[in-house]
Image (cartoon, rainbow, N blue to C red):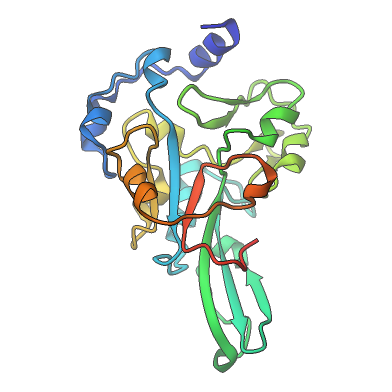
Length: 252
């Protein structure tokens, strides 16, 4: 292990074991349950990914509220949010996300009788394999963990905002109270304890699925192998790890 990787590993304090995974609220395979993640090499067995089934999302905002509470996200900022797409009979498209959908959606964009199609799209950090935010950080504060989660070292971050500008998905913001960049971490503190991200647990429709992409028996891997899925802005070459089922062409 090189010095940079070792520093990141020690910095995260990854000294938990995965024996508690059997008590998790999301589906783990036997391999994941028995895995030992108390060292760097063991973490390499994992590649955490996220799947959103837009055909199941009802725009209730439970995921957004759970994320806010779990991660103490500042007012007016969001680590995850839900967008509503409405299309009228003339082909006009309107997209909105009032308050990140934390209070769900109260009214329609168009007159109800004019709407011919409507759907919801939850969004969050894509934890890209080739993340632009990691590349532009001048102090190395944004980095990828051994188990493929993009995180921010708050002690190194200088709040320059380069990563915020570089992210093509609008997933980052500057926490002005702390003076550092922030974003979705896939609830990494929960992953370490064998628990699902807060938004996954909160979804009443099981529209959010989280798991190990390296495990062929994991729920997320089985679904991706069996269903058609899409990604946001795949042409940018960031290789996003947030996958979508039922992603309509109108989604930006």
